Image (cartoon, rainbow over all chains, first blue to last red):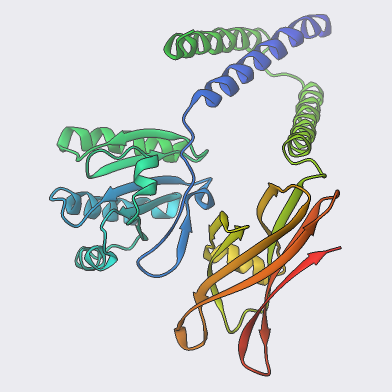
Length: 168
Length: 183
């Protein structure tokens, strides 16, 4: 029995090592979400890297974008549902004037921080070419999905990937 | 090699490893507790070695990128901070912006508890240099507040450390910004 265990242990260890190495290499290839710090409409500053360990959805939007409000409200509902299991939403407004964003954020009764990026530096970093843009980031800070405005089918897909990320 | 091919090969490798592991596991159902604890200790040891190696590499990288002969570091600290709520600090060296940092609530709390933040690490050649720090935030009565502090440093052969300290001047009920060089 002991001999058999001794023979199998190196094989198991080798396999474990190979699996860990493969996973490490795969993780190294994954795009890590670029860190940023932005002021919120409430006056406090927020840094993405402080949410490491949580699933983060960044919603890029602007007050002049028709589809954005629907997404902002959708993510407010999701935050209420999954907020206590480590799901965080950060809205990033690309409005030139924070007052424009503030009016819409107040009307939509958003409970998550709405950050202001009037210089569009963060938007450029995340290659935002259409609004709204939703970026899903896992607990290790890796970008896992990017979505435009969601239709019903895409919303189901988003819910599946969101639950998977929360369960990881 | 293309990224997709590389990712596929990695996935296959991981799968093969997983199958091998599953087979090894299936042959001997429950591993004895002693063996498991030995394996666990080995994994912990491996993890500790990786952490040590990572630290050594980090130090080596810093030594290579910022040799002591040219290294200069600027730190921000805060003592009480009742009369000033810090928002951001901008550093200019010889009129060139080298750092612009926004402080979050957590970071401010860490500074208030005695933490020190290294805001900039860079290289300067020997000689005289002017460092200007701009502090932006809210002063008393929630008023926007911006103050600058200037320091002229003589960079020698050794590493130079500069501290930007925000403290309360109780007599005047005003914040005070002190820039000093650590000897």
